[in-house]
Amino acid sequence: MVSFDYVIKDPMGLHARPVGVMVKAAALFKATKVTISHNGESADGRRMFALLGLQVKQGDTITVSTEGDNEQELADNIRGIFLTENL
Image (cartoon, rainbow, N blue to C red; front, top):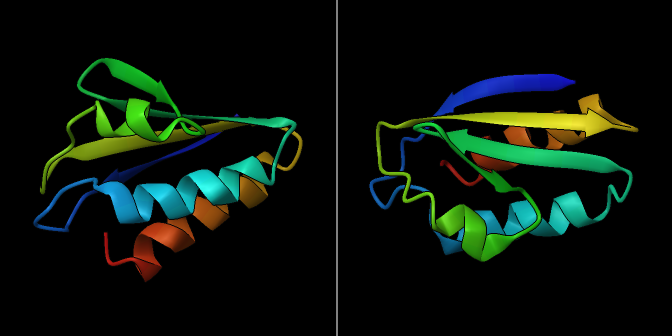
C-alpha cells in the first residue's frame, strides 16, 4: 500500500473538475484500489459523487491510499493531478 497526505489549497475545496480528472486516471488502473480519506470518512477514488460527498474544504488534509498493481504509479499520477490542477 502507498499513501500520502495532501493539503487542499483551492478556495473551492475538492471540487468536480479535479475530481473528474482523478477518477478518469484511476479508471486506467483497474487492478489498483484507490481510497481518499478525510475526517474519519473514506471514499472510493473511482466514484466522483462519493468523493464530493466528503465535503473537503480549503485547508483540509486528505489521505490518498492506493493498493494493488502499479500502486506507486497511480499514487504519483494522482499527486501530479492535484499539483497540475492547483488543488
